[in-house]
Length: 89
Image (cartoon, rainbow, N blue to C red):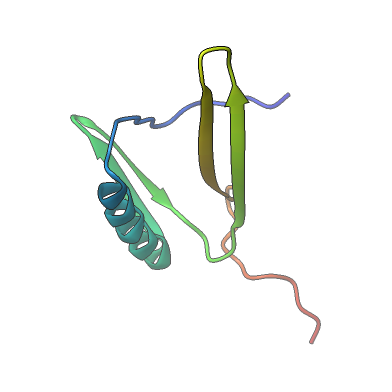
């Protein structure tokens, strides 16, 4: 049975320019293979392997009062996955 545990979560209003700057910095950290997330006294460091799964999802949620849109970017990997893809020699 799968068990999910939230290790870090942040949600706050930002301008488009602030979001773009954050994503640029995040992209630089992803290339380095290590990301440290901080908010107040909360901090977590993630080591990201060379090969990951990238999921992008756009959603529309229609409610009676208004329609809400979201764009989700998710990067997944499994513990211990540090090697490259399988190849035949």
